[in-house]
Length: 159
Image 1 (tube, rainbow, N blue to C red):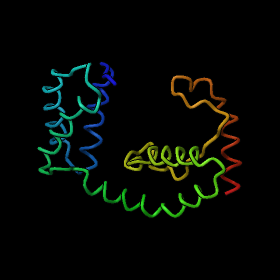
Image 2: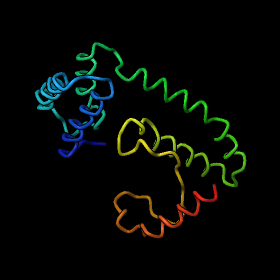
Image 3: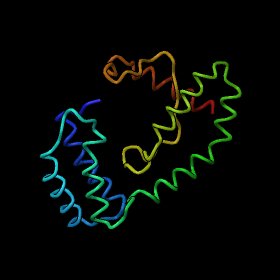
Image 4: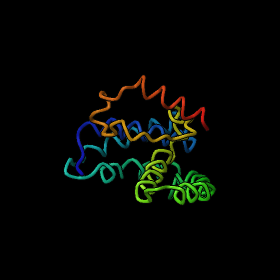
């Protein structure tokens, strides 16, 4: 995977969200963004976004004095994931297609992974899967959103 110029604003946004998550004040966040801005002049489109984003997390760690600024969040989310294991095992045991169920469980985990730390995803409590709708993000405009909403409402009412 390679990076694109559009990745740069996302790196700044991620830096700001991450800095807020670890409790940095606005002055420290300004310092972080300034540091990152200077380092992103070495942005290499041939490298993956996570490799290019190392400057963000390195600068954040340096600024807050932690080797892993996300250690507490990782611990909380690991405990949450462990608490869900019995439910996931039941879903898998009841599934007709074990591979499909495993992939869906993994996808749900990725969707929820640290999602609660962001305002726009904090209220997610349930992930539903519908086989009839496209999932390729390049084709989201083709999804019948009203029909999907009606289906999801009915699914959630069923419990």
